[in-house]
Image 1 (cartoon, rainbow, N blue to C red):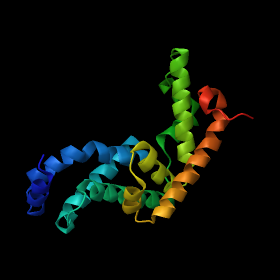
Image 2 (cartoon, helix red, strand yellow):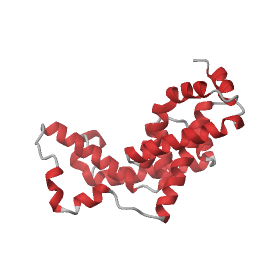
Image 3 (cartoon, rainbow, N blue to C red):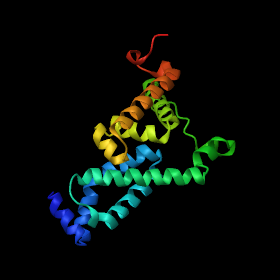
Image 4 (spheres, helix red, strand yellow):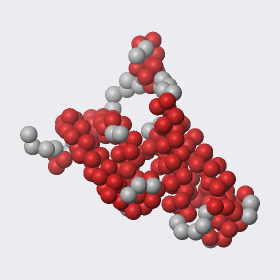
Length: 195
């Protein structure tokens, strides 16, 4: 893929060139949105909104890493949606069904192998602990530890200083460690703190 050429064509209004860029980056944009939003439907909406915003703003792209530019847009899109939700909270379907015994028929009560169950419980514990992090710490931890971004790239995407990125990631990791110790029996032995 000749990315600079496609970007240039997209800046001139070539929708086919822009769609090629979208197809190339759609998975990573969606994954970042999913880690931040914690919900597939919200992540799809955020990714779509980010690509629309990027298309509208592509003429302002002045070079550098297109991927970082795009990830900054999706991160900001997610932040905007999280802020909007704080102003107008909504009930999720999970909350409604968990509190309503009449929909218990929807639950999957098929027993599976013990190892699979423990893995699912561990994933749930990690997700729960991630969900408890403040938004800023969760976003920094997701970008670093899940998406593999370096500190400087995260600082650029979040428009914060390098020191702030390091601090947020350190605090997030400490909170995750402390939270996961509450699920010690699910953790592999090498990750359990001696008490």
